[in-house]
Image 1: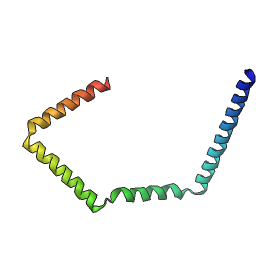
Image 2: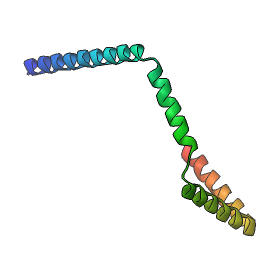
Image 3: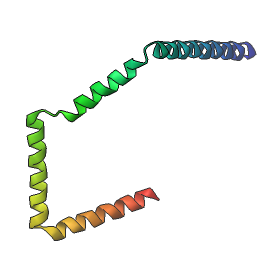
Image 4: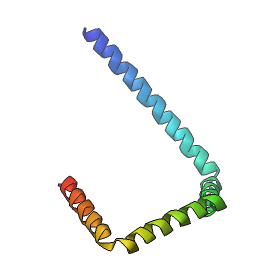
Length: 93
């Protein structure tokens, strides 16, 4: 039984060493290519700001419908907001 434990511990040590080596290799790659991370961030920022026209229109329609319902029934909207606040307050405890 102790030999199994020892072999498992040794296997874990080898896995940890392999992970450290992989992390070190990744850090070396990042130091060699410092602009790579910045390029990815710029690319992601550009993708986030552009929405397809149909998605944008659908969002506008949803917001308009929600605004219309709130203006037609303001007491219901206040009641729902209060109930939601109470539920979130209880779940935070």
